[in-house]
Image (spheres, rainbow, N blue to C red):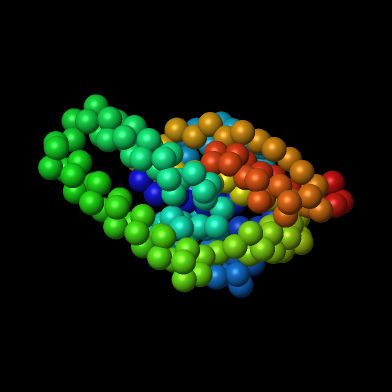
Length: 184
C-alpha cells in the first residue's frame, strides 16, 4: 500500500552500512522477504532504508504513479482486498488512507522531495566504499501487503558504479539496480 526503498549489499558489515545510511538521513535495517531471499545472490543482504512511515513521494517513484497508473493500481488493489474478504467499509477506509498518503506525498514533492537521485547515488557510492562491500543496489517496490510476505519478482540490472547515476534516473519499480565496485 506504499512505496519502500531497499538496498541490497554484497559483503560488508551491517553496522557499518547502517552508519553510512544514517549519515545520509536514512537507515539500513536488515529485513527478510521470502521471495527476495530467492532472488538474491550468495552474500547479498537486504536492508530497509525507510525512516518514516513509508517512501511514498520518493524522487525514484515512476511519474506514471501520479496519473492513470495510480488509479489502475488502486483498482487492482481494491480487487485484491475484496478477494481477501475485506468489507466495503474497510476498503473505503483503505482508499481514504491511501488518498491522504498520496496527497502528503504530492505535498512533499512540491515542497522538496524527501530524497533525490543525487542522494541515492551518494548513498550507493558511500556503501560501496565500505570495507568488504563488492556491490550495492536499490530496489523500489510498491507493497500491497506485509513487507516480509510480499511477492516480489525483481528484474536485476548490474552496471558499473560510474554508470549508476544515469541508470538510476531510469529505474523502474521492481528493478534491482546493482552498482558494481570499480575493483570487481
